[in-house]
Length: 467
Ligand SMILES: Cc1ncc(C[n+]2csc(CCOP(=O)(O)OP(=O)(O)O)c2C)c(N)n1
Ligand SMILES: [Mg+2]
Image 1 (cartoon, helix red, strand yellow):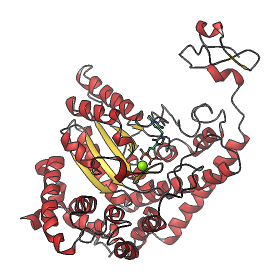
Image 2 (cartoon, protein in one colour):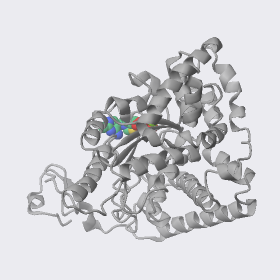
Image 3 (cartoon, helix red, strand yellow):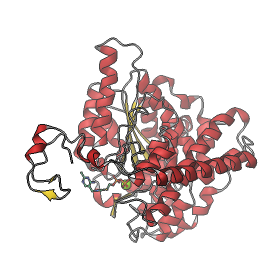
Image 4 (cartoon, protein in one colour):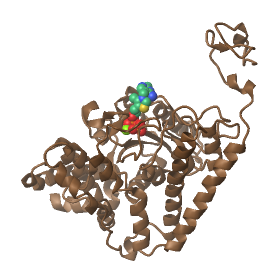
């Protein structure tokens, strides 16, 4: 029974097997593995039924999922990075780490009918992954050259999550992000010029230079922010999902089918707003997807030291919605899960919680020397670079040629170069912009007409201040 269920739900079983076994340490001994897989198969089957209902696509496409899993290298629960991390420093960690290169063994060629993407989709995904990576590598250079100020948090390594979800969205759909928001903005279609200019604090930025790195926003592209306070984007996305529901059910607008996605981190999933929003989303059956980008760290705090149950996906069923775990280093797996969750939200079946196991390749911010994470852990995830493996998938399955990928690389280099030149040449915001859209009376924190901070400026109470 367990075996057949396992094959039915394909990748999810393997993912969750690792998830459960690795973290709980239940399966550290080899002889326990078969027992554990039985337990896990049951859980995964439950999740699959819960998530997909009787029409679970995994009953018919399990082969595809197994194909996809090969890329992630899930072997008897050992392929999950979590298992590795949970074991790090303890018994068994060396063996698992040593096998890390196996995880990027070339995938066997898929049969044409098993391919997970068309050529066009593959090229679009590759381009978006490369845009995120190249853009942010350039951000690092510009930051260290003093072109940006404040904190800058890069997303290197996590690109498969942004691309996997956002490239499936429509322009009218909503996205909220955190301070690690540049790549979500790019995936959602905000032009690279506008994102780079915002980072440079220039008036041509998507927030006219007033937001900076952590506050990307574009109404036109449904990007509702960029939030520096962790968890703040979750209720905003929930509110956006509520507007869809309200338009559809109260205002009888049959075309209102926008989906909201809230992206946030593992550390943030310990925050109260997350739980409040899970509750409301199920209560009102909102079209929202909560995407936890579990990169195992919250600045320098390990996920395993800070949360009562490291399996974040489990919180979904606790609130009456599906909870899914997926390998966030594999864009194809992310995409498959995202497709289902988006379709579910769009047809009015309610929210989904998805935990993506991922990793950031750089420090918490560009000011972080990144000394707390072990070299072995970093090497393990570097070997699972989502771009390298996706590129290999495209080439090995003859979906694209090297020349086509090189052409995209060149195009992206040009886009990023152009964005830098544009941002550099753009003007700074005019001074009077500083206090526009300031709704609170900033008594005690005002900037006076002479440009100096002052204790009190009664003029502020009259409306937007002139400085
Ligand atoms: C409400 C709030 N509390 C504390 C902080 C300080 N802080 C900044 S980043 C961060 C860690 C968040 O980690 P995680 O959610 O895992 O996201 P990641 O940085 O890994 O993407 C914390 C606690 C904050 N920004 N907001
Ligand atoms: Mg984190």
